[in-house]
Amino acid sequence: MNNKILQVKNVSKSYTNHLALDNVSFDVEEQTVYGLLGPNGAGKTTLIRIINHITAPDSGEVEFMGHRLTAADTAYIGYLPEERGLYKKMKVGEQALFFARLKGMSKGDATRQLKEWFERFGISDWWNKKVEELSKGMAQKVQFIVTVLHRPKLLIFDEPFSGFDPINAGLLRDEILKLKNEGSTVIFSTHNMASVEEICDNITLINHSRNILTGNVAKLRREYAEGRYTFTFTDANPAEIMGTLENIAGKFNLSDDKNGRHLLDFRLNPGNRLKEAIELVNNRATLLGVNEATASMNDIFIQAVNESNTK
Image 1 (tube, helix red, strand yellow):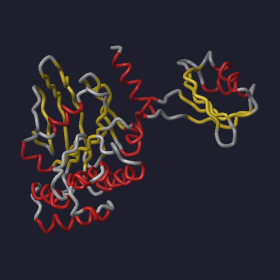
Image 2 (image 1 turned 30 degrees about the horizontal axis):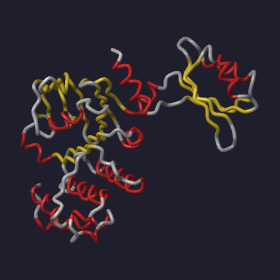
Image 3 (image 1 turned 180 degrees about the vertical axis):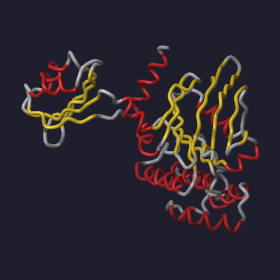
Image 4 (image 1 turned 135 degrees about the horizontal axis):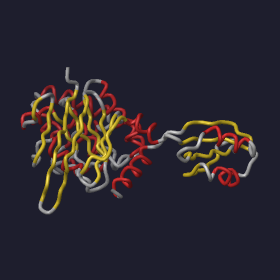
């Protein structure tokens, strides 16, 4: 059984004097949150437009639910673009209902479900207000609702948390995870690497039109953290400890916890052993803890892009 809802196979796309995508491939498994990452101008938007059947690749293909993507498949795809678009003079409820009917929902079902979503998002009082009266955050809530209302099999969110305060960003994050748990698959494009760590199962990182990194988030964080450790210690000058380790380690990051204990993050240089680092610090400080570190997605993004830029 093929559990891959989307397969991007060797997709390339050029515009006048610009190669937007260069032989990009990756698979998205059903009922996962997939991060589509990359610097500005990397090619993410072009790829999203191809998946939405807005434009076509010059070569390669996209398969959806086991067959070559067609215009008819867009009925099963929900897309929330970074640049939002609502008709400002229409009433909020009227417009939400209009979009729901375009997706094939009956007026009765759409109205009932919209009312439930509006109540859940705390915007019921705005049903009869004009869109132009909405704040940016409220307008984004409305667009999120109309994107997911018809329960598409594949959801594509482009910077969905942009403009949200932490409380509403958390609300949206919880709803995305709930949709996943209920059977939806999500492609999530963002520059916020903390959000990637929170909700993404797998990622693809695109730079200069090429796929430079694909994998499981937890596995990548372990792989990129190889050789990275955190020492917790007291009774020593941190600068002295870093000097002691400088011949066998690098990339130091020093902080203190709430109890005043020193936390030193570092990466062992190739060929050196953790045991040696422990012995060196033990001779000069009270070593309270040794923990294997994990790389942040922000660190991984920067390292992978910088390495790609030098090739």
